[in-house]
Length: 248
Image (cartoon, rainbow, N blue to C red; front, top):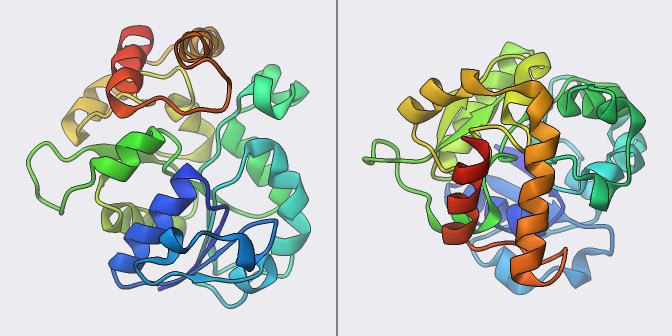
């Protein structure tokens, strides 16, 4: 597939590396220009391009940017074909994204993203920590392969997203519609807990929607106390252990 990735942070970098290694034609872009993209992001074949080139004639576009920047790229996607699958990886963290009133009032994050972009989107790769994502991928059929929940409303979006998640080294768990994707938001039992398909199936319906923000904020406070700042991502071992204690 021809894939464009916007954003080459922790998650975007691993997406570029794994999807290129899987044989896809991958273009990556950021807001600062292709010359600023590190060569290690391109080591398995991805090509650094402008953001305009990253969305041009693509089968799939993956948005790996902070949620509060989603409205900025809406004009960029305005001319993209409805047949192109757009996958969002973002999560809402009010300390980083500034408070968004509609989400604070209970709007599902993925529905807010779809509303900003005025087009269908799928949700994937948001519920795995960046360190786990970079280190724990396994071939399909491997024992104890970690699963990643995905959500989509269109069947074509669902099929493509499931296939691409597998190509990054993880099983895809079909979590249903975007309206139900709150079950994979921060604070949910399947968020950052590195579960298998069977484990996610058992855990996803135990999510308590009204408790997610408080649990999310407890985790942020614990990470910041341990790591000393709000920008360093936790390692897989500590991040998963804490997430399981707080979310499950």
